[in-house]
Length: 218
Ligand code: G3P
Image 1 (tube, helix red, strand yellow):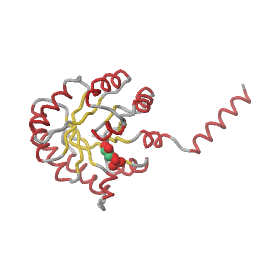
Image 2 (image 1 turned 90 degrees about the vertical axis):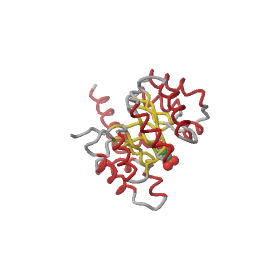
Image 3 (image 1 turned 45 degrees about the vertical axis):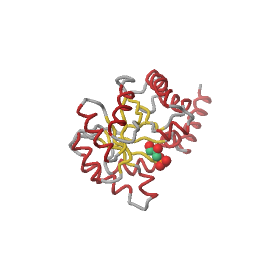
Image 4 (image 1 turned 30 degrees about the vertical axis):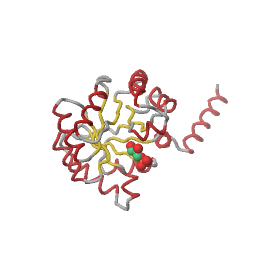
């Protein structure tokens, strides 16, 4: 079944996230501990961020669980899930993460498995019935791998299952276009990349010409 592309913002910069949400330009917000730290946020502020982004129109808000083993990952996932019904809990694609994932999915949670680097891991996610898998295009390329080909394979192994690919670590609008061409439905990126997707200098010039013309004939 054809799926329309969907954009998320991968940031905890409340000003920039707020602009994108209130402008209706993204469906939701994805974060991870690194993103929170970069924005100077603490774990104790997660609930406040969730409430703010939901009030600004986010249909989904993603926070990542943490912990050294499956039971810690599950305990922190419970804190995240208690935030509300628009929360998606992210779990890293590790052995312990998969143990936690299985239990979270069985309990009815909406789960994203993150830092997925191989089609085999994506296949495991699909077999567990997770809602989303997040491969990192930029980091795959940084490690010398063919990121688009690998993500296309992940998309292929998830096709027809309940699991959807949200591509992350996207560093330019062209990354998004390239992945969409191999069937990837969902994308999360830095605000600059999202805004870059929407604009072209020549469109701005054309719009300025239209405005000038309307001024002359009004
Ligand atoms: O969500 C993944 C993202 O945080 C990684 O992006 O550009 O640091 O590889 P990047």
